[in-house]
Figure (cartoon, rainbow, N blue to C red):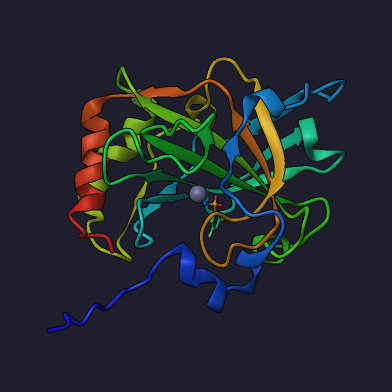
Length: 235
Ligand SMILES: NS(=O)(=O)c1cc(F)cc(F)c1
Ligand SMILES: [Zn+2]
């Protein structure tokens, strides 16, 4: 008596069918093998400036949450970005279904509880985020590894709004001053590599800049994200 086995493959294994880019040569995320990282040499310093007092929207895109900058001014330049200036478009997070396994990048095989992505696009060369997202030098994403520790006050300005965007497509706008620079670690040492969007369409248009130092968030902040994420209310 053969039990019919249905193997439902949803996720990276099927992305290749719909998104040919996922078969590419510079796919993200990756495991950072620290012993194989070369030193930065004479790269110029990475410089950023964000506006603080403007209305932002927290959106439930169907996975985790996303904060849209609504076109307000900002700048990211230097480091591996050559002479181009990039602008913050949105920032979002990735949390796992189990604490401690939520990050996308791993470091020497180790995963972290979550990972914050600040997504910037190249305003020196392109006229819109959408256009830049299709170009090999179009996007620059700052990656921040999250670990459980003390409460993160700046991030809490978003976490406390999650109960109001429980379903996919929900959006809430807030004007409380918030400085995205406060989401970054104190030490700004980073790894960088040419990669891709980590979710479909997996376009190979991202210069990844992953900070070495994790940022601490409280267990309650992880739980709020997990319950928000795991209850499936947002998918
Ligand atoms: N997770 S990620 O930062 O690579 C990313 C950014 C983006 F703007 C769109 C995506 F689909 C994925
Ligand atoms: Zn991301």
